[in-house]
Length: 422
Length: 77
Picture 1: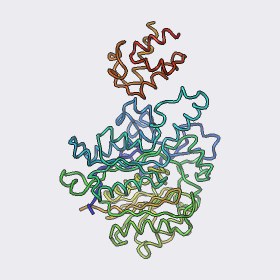
Picture 2: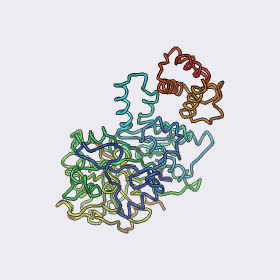
Picture 3: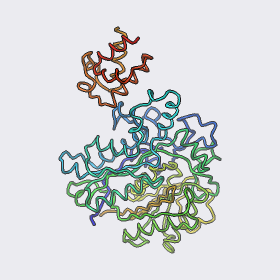
Picture 4: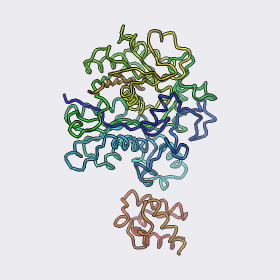
């Protein structure tokens, strides 16, 4: 099969819009959590989130949709599409990929997904429709909320006529999108793919829905930065985040021919299903174990070569430890030489964007040989012994291969392995 | 009349994201201002909202230029 490398990155996160700014904040140990500002959350048990700050709130790293979409188009779509479009443009610019010939455009595809899609717009339109009827329902209501419309808008804006696809696998979306897009290149269906995930579910109905499922942290409303604390004994649920992570994947020889920057090679991708429960992970961590195992088998590298694992680690009481046990079971004696952290401690859980944002953080950890920390890990769970979870502060460490895990509702698991390209 | 014309033009500029000088009375939404069929549906909704009138579907289909919109709204209000 053809080899696939990463040649461009784009990020919209609660720690900033833009790859280098968000990464710097992450390494400095900053948290993106705060009180919810998008709506009045005072009646909900969870009143905090990791929101993407706007340009007027943060002139340097705030989000500005104008860089990728006209005001006219932006008005018609939900935030998840705006985030996806901006992150995609960053990644495309970063890769320097702006072909004009028909052959190149037809060999460039897009696979950007979302876990939930336009929940905010669906919620608003449903209320307005109930009150005012059909005459007030925008003709852009449906196309502005559909999950695959990020891929649609990106293809229209940049002229990419190759495979146009969208993944929807809850919190595994971003990882599945990168893995599946890489396979399209490996199998010669495309030479370049714009891939990743975007999410914007920090709206009243979204937060309320996760509250109802008892999934969110509710004990830290007065100290939001302390709320996301993977593996800590005081953890009580995840903090909802939003944003987008997009990568440019490219066939190795194609990238070399045009002298593109090569961040890493994607060498492993593993998928599995729990076949257990709609929201809870299987108790024995078997689904996580098999996804990681499959990714490492595909990578064909020894376990000892993996220096860093970016965990799914959402800060939920059960999930964190189940993943940890699966990692220990798979790595065995090599777990002692492994570093693993959860960047959700800083940016919250970006749902469908989590897998791709965290894949980018994993790649940057390898680029800079510095591991992002697990914030708030003050009092580790008893099961944490024997594995380095990079508590509180980033750590310098030379790593040549990284693993990134994502697990989603429905029992859907994906693991990605990236390796330094020399 | 001029008030209605100004308000119609303002809505067209905002919704279609076009330059003010392009929005002449004879400008066609689709031919001259780059609108598609969804845009025209949205424009009619915006006119209804702004002027508090109802534009039935058969009348909406005949509103193809800025002048068509101004004339219909002038008559309706």
